[in-house]
Every structure is written in structure tokens, then in C-alpha cells.
Length: 143
Image (tube, rainbow, N blue to C red; front, top):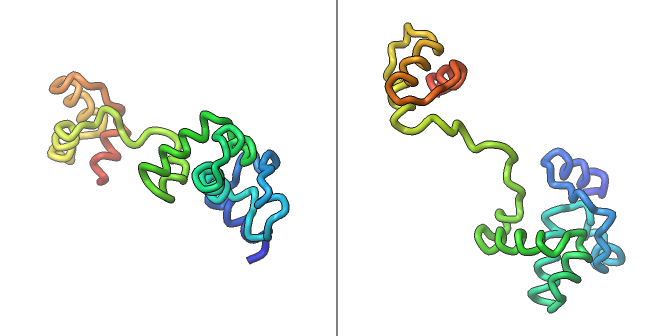
């Protein structure tokens, strides 16, 4: 795999280190071509390894890998909790409808299919006191 194709793959998956130019760790500047400063996961892993295995202070390991000291602790905690998968950034945004609880979802699923999303939303507000947008109701019905 060439550096260009590797970078293209990283870009396609949102895995490019946002501050690759700030990476000054020797593995990435003078090491083999295997180490790519633009590879966010590799940089995070090597930052942790530099501290744990090589004994570098947290601030030095973080700075050499283009991160701030507080970010090191976030990365370390994510790795501790999830291993390599923990090094992946979480998807931004909400994780689903906030107001659509299990009870409300069951009510929406059991509502008369002939009713519009707006009508079911009104029923939900009357019964549960929760205001839903008609599109939230319509998406819940599609599941």
C-alpha cells in the first residue's frame, strides 16, 4: 500500500490525525515508512506506548505525538476501557432520539397506522406529556 492510498483510506474513514504536522516522535519522523503521522490510531497507540513502555513523561509523550496532556488522559482511558477499538473517535452527535423511551416507542408502534405522524405525536403528548416531532414518530414507525 502506498502512502497516498493509505492516506486516502484514512480520509475516507475519518481517521486522519488533525495535527499530523505536530507529530515529532522519532518513529514518525525518522522511522520506517510503516509509521505515518497522519494515521490517528497509530499515533494514539504509539503515544500510549511511549509513556507506558518507554517511560516518557505524559506531557512529553503527548507533545511528541501532536496532543495536549489532557488529551493523553482521554486517550488512555478510552484504551483502558475498549482496547484498540477505544482509540476510535466516537461518532459525533446524539445516539438516537432522546425523548423516545421504550414506553413511548411501544405506544407509537401500536398506534393506528391510519393516523398521521402529527396525530400520533399529539396523542403521545396527551398521554405522556412529551412533545415529539411528527418525523420522529414516522421514523419510529419504520423500524
